[in-house]
Length: 287
View 1: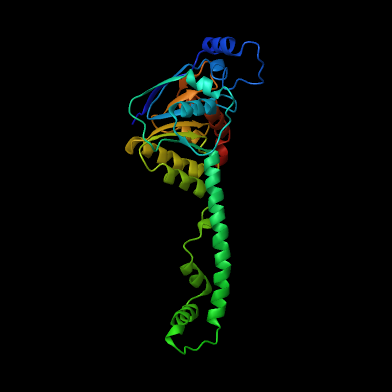
View 2 (view 1 turned 90 degrees about the vertical axis):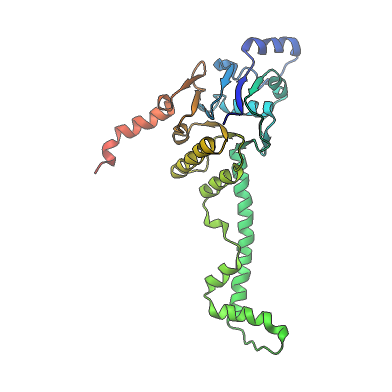
């Protein structure tokens, strides 16, 4: 599914004209995001069901993602670095939609995932306090000298019988809704994506591999592939993970190239570095 088909950024000449016409002799420490993407010759992007922005730190891939998100006014949770000129820059951009954007469209960043894990940690702390209370309750009920004298004691009788007929762990587990801490940070991060990306929409993902082990990155790769190919999602992903770069059919823009250019994932410098490293150490993996 394609919602966003084309996006154009201002050229260097347009940015320079803006600076001359609007700023005159006023001095500013930064005009971000002006002159970031144009420095790499980036003026236009054409999108596929899965489009990937590849590049190192400072390459502009996250800047491009945020500019697109602001232009399309898609929902986002975590704030981002927005200078005084961000709105002016976005106003110089243009875009073309192939289909109307779904209201579920969103930007998902590593900060969103981190906030989700913090929320789970807060839940865990509440669960831990409740567990301690239940452990104490179990001991009181199991060894209580209790005798039922009226129907008013029926509920207490059930608690005593429950404690005496169960092990401590079984008693506590039956009374807890579930211990979220049984999930690692990676599992929690993966859970966030599966819960947040339930509806057909345009999703802009900024380095979703953060907090994920290689095994989890491969699971995320499969989830993203299925979301795009079978569930009418369009994905724009900023990443340097070789696992995500290998998503089948993805259109990859190399932001480290000058000018920015489309490449196969096996041509990318980061991927080639992994390939060369393991190739040199191939014998260490063989029996």
